[in-house]
Length: 258
Image (tube, rainbow, N blue to C red):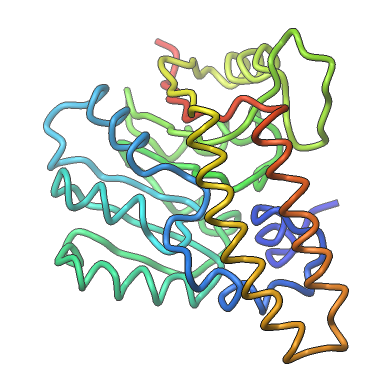
């Protein structure tokens, strides 16, 4: 069963109820970087590319544009971000202007699953903590490989399960499974940055503190929807525990097999 765009966005934000979708801009208003480390992405792209000012970057599920804007500022490359939340796109455009990189950045609001078939000839595609929008790794890498040039890169920010672990999660795979699905999609993992657990914990605490505060605001404004917001706070606590203790949080770089 295919998720609606609202369901997909809420799932990517670690929620379970699509009724949360219209409240996400308010809940996340204090956070610019949502989920992905721009510094890790920047470091990997710098390592694996040359002539960076000529790069065409596609940022799918770009959120508020933090990754694209920091790449544009560092490399003077052209970045195209797509996200389903219009308010996030508005903020991305405003931020790009504030940081004087708006001539390098283009942002648009759309369902990336519908938009992807029209997007071609990129050097780098970023999938930053957006969840299983295109399905598993085979489906995802097969789909986005049609959008990149020869020797193009796909940067994926995600969490996976250590091969020796007995833990299971409906939205996470073991690394060996990811590598097999990537190979079946004719892509190979060429590099990754594993995010330090202390860094994850620090980031999680910052995000959780702001989300909880805004959810409490909404409970006061909408007491009839109390359980919706309480459930989201609870879900954030659960997901933070998983990220900090059960998963390997990684920014991975894939390239087409030669």
